[in-house]
Amino acid sequence: MGDAGNGTALPDAAALAEAGLRLDVDGAVATVTLDRPERRNAMTFALWRTLAAIGRSLPADVRVVVLRGEGRSFSAGIDLKMFSGGGGFPDGADAAATDRFIAELQEGFTWLRNPEIVTVAAVHGHAIGAGFQLALSCDIRVVADDVKFCMKEPALGLVPDLTGTKPLVEAVGLNRALELCLTARTVLADEAARLGLAEIVAPAGKLDEAVDDLVAALLAVNPGAAVATKRLLLEAPGNDLAAQCAAERREQRGRLREMFGGQQG
Ligand code: ACO
Image: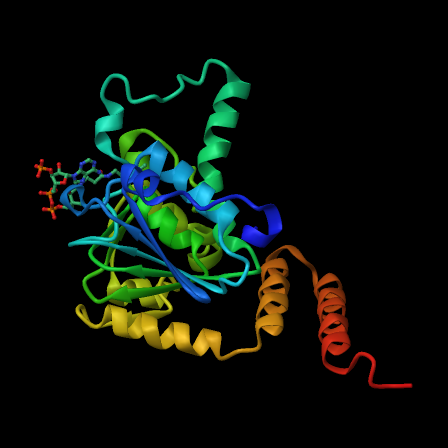
């Protein structure tokens, strides 16, 4: 990841606008704005591909990425116009091609887990389907008290396939995830906080302030320790205790080298 890493240029303003996105990079903080408010930030394949391009080309000194939505809602999910003729969906007949097609879209979401960055979803109003999955892909969700999460895909005949099922199950547990997905019901702010879908709830209108406070706190932490700790915590659900203890030792060796290396004769 990062400019320095692979030399890829960030998508330019025209490409971002075409995809319904805005990107502001201010030192260590990048803000990605879903920017089709007249469509409640409905998302297209182009948007997800552009998100992936942002992930591949983020400047190396960016430490925090904030995702937010312009207008009345975070996102109303996939652009329903794509379901009418010519939307560009593969028909599933060619398994390998369909797999590649979806994998490319998922790249718009997976980079948000990179340990080099901390990702914050600032969510207000509706976060439906793909919008909910985008919020789930981020490390920390700050929500306004008017938030409405809904996993709508099964109601439309689909499964959630934009990397949201793993964080959903990890946050709320298998049984609650089943209940939420198979009823496609809406989760409001209080319940979202209770279920672990929101780390911080702010009054509507104070969301930006809450996000700014969080970002300042994240930036105050030692950068190397932040990267190592995210890498370590991401491993925890897949590790048994012995493996996780080994991972802690591995990461701490790196920190100790950084802090005390070369001080002893
Ligand atoms: N795709 C395309 N256009 C949309 C979408 C969408 N997902 N959501 C809203 N819009 C459009 C509306 O058609 C409307 O257009 P118009 O002004 O030309 O009539 C405009 O955005 C505003 O929408 P309203 O419905 O008027 O806004 P409101 O704030 O009252 O309701 C809500 C918002 C609840 C999000 C509603 O628009 C809605 O239910 N949208 C569809 C949600 C959905 O089913 N998404 C798919 C999920 S599955 C997945 O993401 C894979």
